[in-house]
Amino acid sequence: MDWIERLNKAIAYMEEHMTEGIDYVQVAKITHCSSYHFQRMFAYIAGVPLSEYIRRRKMSLAAVDLQVGGEKIIDVALKYGYTSPTAFNRTFQSIHGIAPSRVKEKGVSLKSYPPISFKLIAKGVEEMEFRIEQKDAIRVLGVSTPLSSDATKAYEEAEALWGKMLTEGAPKDANGDLLDIGTVWKELNAACNTKLPELEGFFGIEIERDESSEYNYMIAVASTLPESDNLKEYIIPAHTWAVFPGKNFFADEYADAESSIKMEERLYSEWLPTSGYEIADGLDVCLILPTEDLENAPFERWIPIKKR
Image (cartoon, rainbow, N blue to C red; front, side, top):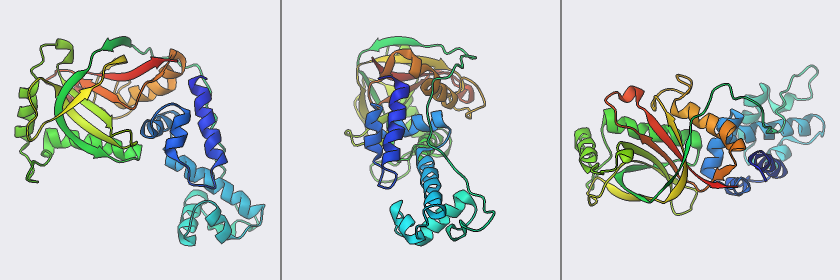
């Protein structure tokens, strides 16, 4: 089964369970990836967060139930998982622009959001440079922060950790006190004692916690030094990686075609469906290459892959 077919099967599963609590973990299993990565990939490919897509679909179905089916508002609210009529009314109005009590009024306009159907389309205007590499396990030291299950919030949290490290401060020490930014940054630089040129730089790593579909984001360097109060160890497992070089790691989504966010969008929507590979596990790695110009930092995105 190819990548596009799996995505459409995931959509079909959600349609079958719109009146139930949709299990993101179960949806993600259909596409052979974690729920966190499925949410990210869905947002990049569909152009809307998964949670918002589900909300729109439920309100589209609810409008039909109220206008055509003649069901009571309270019954429809419960049907789509809203125990509070107030919450249902607010959500319905945010989508359709009117209260649910007005759906049968003459001349009322409603909005319909049909189920998404994924198709492989020809783009290919911009080339994508990549290479396939087999790498042994890599030991790193760094600092980390928990990520929200919502992919949009998780991106903001990872970005905030970089901001703290670079400009605003640093994570707390063992006593709960904020560390001086120079302390952590200097310690990270001092820990970067690898003699392998291809591993020089700073890693940004999304790490699944104990197969729980919860993630941490880690800023780290390859190192053989022992752990400290500030820097903790992580082992990047041995993998076959698809490696994509890019520019401007910290650029906004559309500021540059090779920025990290824009690259990730193209990776999932253009490269992966036709590559002959699939995602191997829930690990995501960026290596920000050595530079004195962080605003235009060159980077590599590493995606763990296996053949279909």
